[in-house]
Length: 283
Image (cartoon, rainbow, N blue to C red; front, side):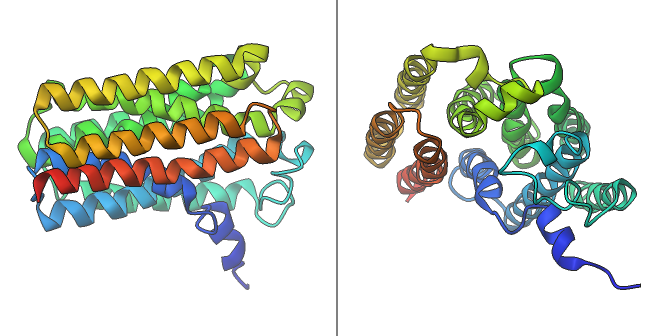
């Protein structure tokens, strides 16, 4: 029996690495901070591989949960479960194999990190179902995508300081920003099939609310940097983030789906800018 490796590759969304990058940036921020600019190589490898694997697992569970919705949405109807390339059973086997790999990785850390990993698993597995019952799946995604932050601090320091939770909160705001852009791409189709999102909840106030969240995130970043007494490279990075947000806000004023998707993709540079700013602070 021939294995359709290409279908599995696309099921895990390795053909679209943007989601993996958006998960990796906050994890890398946390590793830099927890390790005072010099995190252990072992933890760097564990968390980089772990983020890639858990993002893949999250995508698989998302497609399992959405297998009856995806065929009705233009952007998702070619996904392997939606078009019949793979069965639900095959997807579940893939999901549990990914979880096994992730668990083997986290076993190389410490007890606190292992305990936190179970919370991370619950967040990753439950996120896809939030869009059915609540308009806040973007907040659930923010929790899932930010959980690597307390885990990274736990692995490096065996503790979770207040800085980790502050960074977690800032990252959650960021996820709501970029994932609302993402949801705006499919808003009209989601309304027809009953899928919920912040893009639908915000309605005609979407642009104003997202811009307000951008201001809130920028203020949080500045306050965190001032409180921690970080040096000028970090604040230069925050300035670049403000510029990128201004570009995104202007780009999406017309709510054109293509422009919203471009704004979503541009957030990769937001994460990269903050990483380089923190790296510059420690150099």
